[in-house]
Amino acid sequence: MGTHRRKVTVFPESGGRAGGDRVPALTCHLCMKFPETEAGKGSSAALATRSPSPAMPPLANAGRAPGPPDGGWGWAVVCGAFVSIGFAYAFPKGLAIFFKEIQDFFGTSYSEVAWVSSIMLATTYGAGPISSILVNRYGSRPVVIFGGLLCGIGMVSAAFCTSILQLYICVGFITGFGLALNLQPSVIIIGKYFLKRRPIANGLAMAGSPVMLCTLAPLNQFLFDNFGWRGSFLILGAILLHCCVAGALFRPIGAATTPVKPQVTGKGKDALKEEVTEDAMEMGSPTKVPMEDKVEEEGGKACCEKINQYLDFSLFKHRGFLIYLIGNVLMFLGFFAPIVFLAPYAKHIGIDEYSAAFLLSILAIVDMIARPTTGIIANSKWVRPQIQYFFSFSIAFNGTCHLLCPLASGYMGLVIYAIFFGLAFGMVCAMLFETLMDLVGAARFTSAVGLVTIAECCTILLGPPIGGTLIDTFGDYKYMFIKCGAVMVLAGAFLFIMNYYNYRMLAKEEKERKAKEENPKPVRTENEGRNSWNKETTRDGPELEPLSKEQEGLKEEVNGINEV
Image (tube, rainbow, N blue to C red; front, side):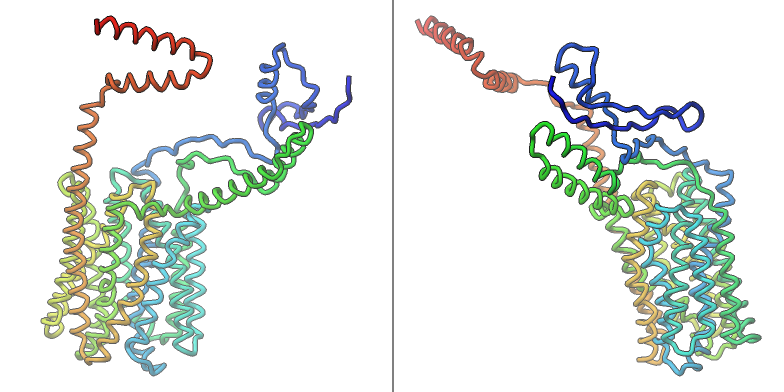
């Protein structure tokens, strides 16, 4: 017998984590003996016996997460989302109380001061994909806690700013990014805890925005009168740390809903390449270069799959998602500017500071009632199947309120405007994410909300500064309200028409699908049978050529008899 080089592989220890001695199995690949006497069976047994390299992790158990509990600890999660979403939406609006004084302190224009809220809102929405990736990687709880810390750091730093540019950085970017890490995880985790009662849960969580706005508007005015805007920013930074407490309530639920694919680490790839190359050298087969190309190709595919795991870019092929995205991008061009400039507008026409701040409180009180009420209505069996139409109506109603605002004269007129504006604003916000989840489903919602928010941040960033430019140009606020109203009416009309088209196309596709199920295609026709027989005869090869020739001769004889 000739000598050969022995290659010993240490297999992973058998048995569970607890109990039993862990003895690794040593196997010589070329000296294996198998019970089968046939070479083919022996080689197959060798492949079956050979275990994966220790560098390659075993397959994870592909389990499904339990269904949403629709209650229980979910209501504690709703309370935490109430606080997080409340700060994320209300805090940029509540800062409008300080705009007049900051403008006088730094000697800036309306449009320059409006960039503070615009940058904060744009960062809150533009950082949506980053927030979604972090939620997929670490979960909602640590992301929200970290976001609360960023909010506190940003506002405390803003108290020591000496220029409007520093306010852009501290309040706009740092605090805005912290609010983004509060908004996205709060909306996402509600979808994991609720299914049947999801519209109600979303409505209750979204009610945090008006409650916080109702509280922050008079509180900010009180803090400014007693501590100035710098002292107020210090106190507000401490208040924003409550987002960390809210994030602690976001207890993870279930396991991953998708099976985990085996991932080969860099070390595992090197071990795999080395092992295959050694075997190839022993067998005299030069397969080193093809193996390197294959590993590089698999690495590129793994990178693309990893990116698509966090952000599902196939949503851009989803018809309903594209309709929602275009309509919302247009809507946000006029969504936040009226709230930002409501209190300054009241001061501009001669209303005292506390009465101007109370307008935001009136708006917030009505908004607070409108959101859960809208959630209950949207959850009804009559409205939920057509919730996209209800959402479109809410946007158009919101725009109509802005178009009528210039007709309001005096404080009572602004009170009436604030009431209707709060109602319309609450209706839109209560269904803002529910309609998106209705279109794409809970499984793709994390990616969808990240992609939507980064697209919306452009118009959110431009909305208030455009309004401030109109005010600086014409010296009147009414043109800003008219611009916002016209844009939102246009967005509502677009969504209504396109959702009607989408519903028609979905009904048509469903009808065609049912027709195919009721009238299945015949199994095999006579022509298909002949074609398949011809293909089989051509695939038979040279072994059956004599038989096919004999069959052709019989056919010719039969044809000759028929002709006679």
